[in-house]
Amino acid sequence: MQRAGVTFIAIFNVVIGILSLFYCSPVLAKERLGTAQHPVRMMFVPSGEAQTILEGGEEIGRRLQKITGLHFRTSIATSYAAVIEAMGAGKVDIGWLATFSYVLAKQKYDVDLMLIVVRFGSPFYRGQIVTRTDSGIQKLSDLKGKTFAFVDPASTSGHLYPKTLLLSKGLNPDRLFAQSRFAGSHNAVILSVLKGEVDAGATYDDARAAVAKTYPEVYEKLRVIAYTKDIPNDTVSARKDLDPAIKQKIKSGLLQLAKTPEGSKVLKRVYGISGLMDFDAFFDPVREAGRLLDLDLKKTSP
Image (cartoon, rainbow, N blue to C red; front, top):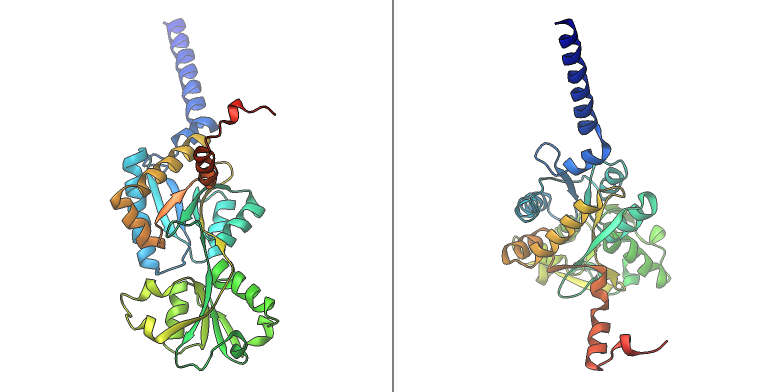
């Protein structure tokens, strides 16, 4: 009896050891990401109306779950920088990053670019500077001594490029305005200008559309006085050490989602997105040129 008891205890300890290895293995822990208990954490930047982005993000998560089988927990950050730091700390798996936010996140934490946002068939967009039609401001130099609203320190079209535009015209943005501030979102900048809280502001082109449903007079009362150079669109990026298999599944799922009528609607509602593209899609025009010229590189000699 004593020997049988010892054998049973030995077998029991072996089983416990195997189970401990199974549940504590880092590889298997990564594989469990995407379950209801350990959902993929996806965060959005607060570039527009927070409630719209939050609700749209939740719907994107639900639809992605149906496509990929993965579970998602979505949230909206308090600032552009908050998404970057959350990804760097491993607290967010997928970040919908504005252009400059991606550049910063890549530089600081080597995040992985998954997809580029497409709007109106293009992977590029512009920033703009808007003012009220009755402000008397006709050109950039007229902004001297005026009040101005930017979006966020990490906003490309709502801060970085507009400031660069001013500098290219010989206008120092640090001394140009009587006062400048960060409004927090593109919608907030448009509304600040519309309501006369500031004389002018910087947003993406055309942020007026995002508030036109509630404020239809926005096109009549606001006008654009300048545009920036073209800017690469915002991105969907993954934290550096995200499991490649999960990353690929999410990437494929998002591309599939963007091609469905329901998915297209929610992407447009959240960030005005008309599609998503892989980097490889940039080479499609080159492929088309080769096809039209009937080139077969396999038959050409080096």
